[in-house]
Amino acid sequence: MKIFFLGGNLASNLADWMASQGEEVIYREDKITADDVKKVSPDFIISYNYKYIISKEIIDFVHGKAVNLHISYLPYNRGYHPNVWSFLEDTSKGVTIHYIDEGIDTGDIIVQKKVFIDENKETLKSSYEILHNEIQELFKKNWEKIKSGGIKAKRQTGGGASTTRENLLCLNHLSEKRGGIQQSENSENNITNGEISLRGVQANDMQDLFNWRNHPDIRKNFFNTKPISWDEHKRWFKEKIGDSKTTIYMAYCQAQKIGTVRFENKENAIKTSVLLSPDYIGKGLGAEIIRIGTDRFIKEKSPTKPIIAEIKKENIQSIKAFQKAGFKESYVTYIFPY
Image 1 (cartoon, helix red, strand yellow):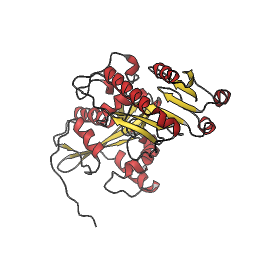
Image 2 (cartoon, rainbow, N blue to C red; image 1 turned 120 degrees about the horizontal axis):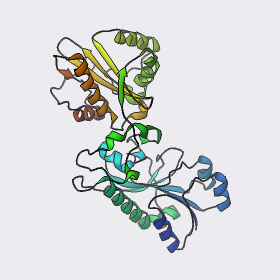
Image 3 (cartoon, rainbow, N blue to C red; image 1 turned 90 degrees about the vertical axis):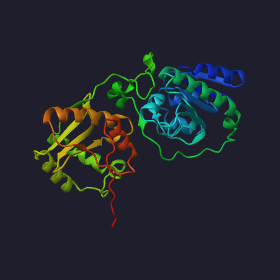
C-alpha cells in the first residue's frame, strides 16, 4: 500500500517502521498541496505531529482514507500542545488515532487509550515522550485493522475547545508549574510568549460583550439562559459603565480581547463574575483573569465587604476557575424552578 506520511518531530521512526512492514512510504514534513497528493496518488495518508492543516480537497482525493495521531484523549485538548493543556485544564490524559476532517482534531475516533501520568514525577517533556511512545505502540498494534477499515469509528461528542497558533500568543504564564507538573526545559513544548493586561471597559467594547454574552456555550451558564436582544444589551452596558458601584475590567493580550471580570458593590457583598471570549473558553485563562482582576480591584477600591461569586452548580469550569484564583466555597443557594 502506498502511504503518504506527513510528519514532524518524533514521526520519522514510525514512518520507517511502516516501510519495514512492506508499505511504500513517501515521507514529507513541509506543507503539501492537493497537486502534491495527486502526483503521489497515495492509498492512505498518515498525519503524525504534522503542523499544517490538511485541506478538504486532499481528504476527498483519498476518499477519506486519512488519519491523524494525536497525543490527547479526544475530544479533550484538540490542537496545539495537547499534553500541556491536559494538565492546565485537568482533563483525561491519553492518545487518539482519528480520521481527518475539515476541523482541528475533530474527526471520528478510530482507537484511543487513556494514559496515566504521575504529575509529581513527570515533567512536560517526559510526559510528551510518554504519550508519543504510547501512540506509536497503539498505531503499530492497530495498523492492519486501520488500513483495512476493520475498526468502526465513533463520532466525537462533548469535550473541550481547540488551541490554535493565534490564541497561543497570550498563554505563556500558564505553562509555569501547576498542580505538581513541572515545566519542560525544551522550548518546543512550552507556550509562546505573551502577557495578559487589564483596562477599564470602554464604549467600543459593547459589541464584543454582546457577542460573548449571547454565545450558546456562554449563555447556557447564565442563570437566565434566554438570548439578549441588542436593545437590552445596550441598556445594560450603558447602565453598568455609568454606575459608580460597578467596575468592569477588559483583559487583553497582544491587542486581542480575551474576556472581562466584573465587580458590583451590593448591600452586603461585592459580587464578581467573569466572561470569556468564546475563542478562549477552556484554555485555563478564566482563573488568571479572575486573579489579576481581583488583585487590581482590591488595590484600587480597598473594599471592606467580602467578594463573592454566584455560579450555577453545573458550571464546573467556572467553579474550578474561581477556586484556582483563590476563592473558597462558602454556601449553596437552592432555586425553585417555575
